[in-house]
Length: 446
Ligand code: SAH
Ligand code: SF4
Ligand code: F3S
Image (cartoon, rainbow, N blue to C red; front, side, top):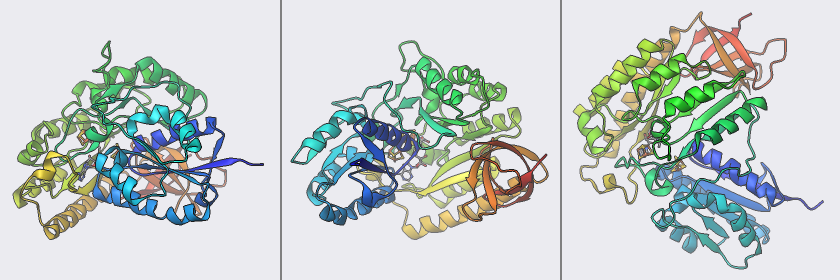
């Protein structure tokens, strides 16, 4: 049989993962079958990210490795899409330095992928479909085919784009302005997933707290959560990401009363110093951030709170950085994703003076990690002896005698395989027996 195969490599965030599932779904309608083996692919698609330089370098070097595959198989088609190639200068780089890439398309062309693929398969020349968001603001297209990677967990985009223009961030330039999906469409999708046995649904948006503000009939995110929480079935509802300037006490109240919404809140703080927050255009103060965290802990005592921090933003002084450490001590996060500041072409921060020297940034980063590991271990130790509901994610990556599960508050728990077989996607109750900084050890609680 002469089946055609597509290999998709996704860089970047969950939004890109979700987009790749749609791209794969569309390719299937053109007769392509997904494969995990790049050597057997007839079509290779790289969905790229631009959030930090490292993400771009990774996408570019992996693209470089495709040259030899193309030399071996002249019929192979190679496509690049996603945030990195949405930037004009990167599109030009691909045009000039990667001649074996056959076609490129931007993030606002996703719904047109079927057409683009037809053209690319037929074309004798290279094709570039990249339009600036000022020219093509991107629309929401419902009902596109989706080939989901997992049966037990799924991403559901509730909105696209971002309006915030944090001064360091490329996302608003490569994803356009906020566009929300109609609540009824989201409801139908989530209901369908739950009916098909999906146990974990993550709602996606760059700033879910401003969901629905752009709709003809505005619809707040807390109402969307409540509406989805009303769906019958055994499932956990997650969401990301929240922006502290828009996260409301009302949203926290809603989470407290919902039965399906996980007790985990990812609330990127970025920095603990008000002057750095201002230079980042985050539009909240550390005090306002603490109020949100304190309220969450009061209303939902078992909540796990995680955050993102940028170290070495231009002009960050030792005093500023100390304020970030103080904030970690105040908030006692259950997880911190920390990033070294990476200048992004075209963003205001890339033009700012007072770059922090690399060695200073690196030393700040290790101080931050050391403090955070200590806090996380202390937080986790408090869970020893407690029972937690968790979703089994399959065999542990480190030990075949163990299974891994994710608690309703997002904690990773490893537990010995019990005699009775447990399926991936099954919900289990675990008793915590041991605590580490980044995970827990547990056992089945009967
Ligand atoms: N929309 C989300 C996050 C999107 S990007 C939000 O606003 O929280 C994910 C994280 O990458 C950000 O929270 C930030 O911490 C980090 N990030 C974004 N741009 C960056 C840059 N130029 N350098 C370093 N980290 C960056
Ligand atoms: Fe980037 Fe800020 Fe938008 Fe998040 S809110 S995607 S950090 S501009
Ligand atoms: Fe990267 Fe684009 Fe996501 S820049 S982090 S893939 S929105």
